[in-house]
Image (cartoon, rainbow, N blue to C red; front, side):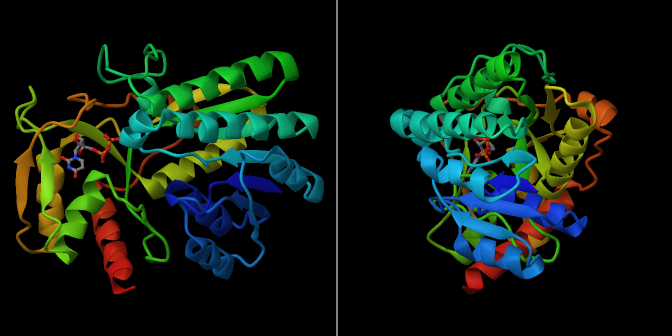
Length: 331
Ligand code: UDP
């Protein structure tokens, strides 16, 4: 049985869905529902009635320990985290407590119960300002915000736990994740929403929410920032492959997950407008603090070693995201 933390959230829920659809259905989900949604869990349980859900908080060691006593867990996929860069700058204590202390409680419960395999959601934010591009896994890690710091700290703790307790971890460093379930059962659902694609799409349903481009005088092809957008369903595939790899080789490792293709904010805006099939109002505003002009993954390692191949185009992802946004706006 696998334990998935944070599967009421965006990426975790798509992984739980993917795992279920591959007939791998022995899942227990642990989530405090602080940013995730009970509706998402209920949808997942409808698709896969064998999913068990425990509402609990990683900050409470007893709550997570009891899960290992109650179920026979073989491995853990750890998504649960707060992930808003801006919020982490304003309220770092929340981030260190939730992400770092929460992960320590999880790892300690694992070690105590002799569960020694974990796949961990890390991030391109651990690299900080790129020294070269595309970024490979050996790029120096110098995060520029508390969110990135928390994820790097957890990676380092996992290294030490490997040496001392033989806990093996695969860290997946995500670039910009977009998209939604093709059948619109689940999708991206943050409140407040800070990300590019849902913000463009939401402006269609809410006239007071004019879409804002954060800066158009970067030194890039059209003046707007370039990012590497990867589909959430492709990302789910990568987690499944990472777990297979971990089970087969029992080895700690790290992989970037991106497409190696950079797209600018304006390019994403234009694709979105084409999908929406109407003109979307926007205005260019000040640059957002801490936004590097370009973030591009070298993800050849994941392709070679995990045999991971991202399949969806940005067009596919935004099309699914738009279908999902329509569902959200009906509620
Ligand atoms: N962005 C934007 N308007 C928005 C949200 C994002 O112009 O409403 C830009 C942002 O400055 C960055 C890119 O879109 O260059 C991707 O931002 P997002 O927050 O989606 O992901 P991040 O790169 O911060 O992880």
